[in-house]
Amino acid sequence: MKCIVGLGNPGKKYEKTRHNIGFMVIDELTSRHNLKLNKTKFKGNYTTATINGEKVLLLEPQTYMNLSGESLRPLMEYYDIPLEDVLVIYDDLDLPTGKIRLRQKGGHGGHNGIRSIIDQLGTKDFKRIRLGVGRPVSPVPVVDYVLGAFPKEEENLVQESITKAADACEKWLENSFEEVMNEFNV
Image (cartoon, rainbow, N blue to C red; front, side, top):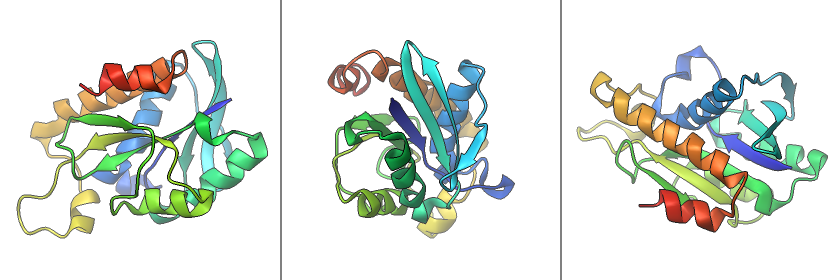
């Protein structure tokens, strides 16, 4: 079974914020495949399904961003999901809004959700899809920026990146991650 994890913060207050773009990708996948995150356990909302012939678990941790690993690790242990079958989706300040980047592994780059996952799993070697949210242009604190909503003029770019990321997830269920990286990291 493969596991696709979208990072974000629970609750209506954070629903449309930059930090929740990982949740938005999971929501896109559940919408496409007529699924609901109908299980609540391991400090997260999730579902299991078969997509493109592959059994997959879709997860939105409900721990708040900084503790995301506390949801993922026990779920991986319970379902016996190997590290190579985990894909984490999250926002990235270092990419312009609308861009996505797939990576096999890496550091946390200051992202507290990724830091939590690295701490809980004890490794940096897990697959990721980073979705660009850009950096603030005015002197806005980063925390306020990522917890803010996308401006109206970026909505199309944001939706395109969510669509691309969901497409990449579906491709990964049928192909090697290297092939998916080659296709989407253009």
